[in-house]
Length: 185
Image (cartoon, rainbow, N blue to C red; front, side, top):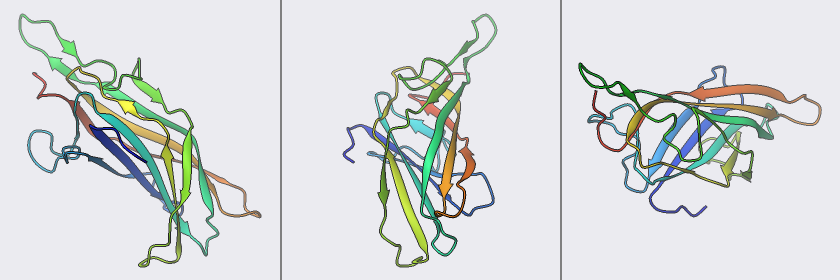
């Protein structure tokens, strides 16, 4: 996939056989600012105003266990606005409902329009089958500065073979996110 600049990619990963519901996730961006390891945004995700956000979903599963593929049943981003201004004699203000222009409210349901790819075997883990699904669209980060609690929730159908019934699983993660400069509190 070709990314428009400025861009950020959210890559989520899960194992068809994992026992937890936590997604492994990574934000990467054209300038390296997405997933700060230090500074005021440490541990969160810092978006740039006007960025295009792309999504890819990666799954691996044991070939011996019959894993063949997965299907995304639903996929949603939830943003909970945080305070941007509070104090004596000034009005209390919150961030907009979402940092993304496509979302009018606090939730954004991704249209189920993904392109699926069977990935080549990993030489270090040849017993795993790896499948990637790339969302054919992108989200656009707005111009408003702010802070949000961000959650990503996804339901998938894990397909293991012709004789096994598909298994439905829910996976998620929930970092903090910000756009623009440091919000005043």
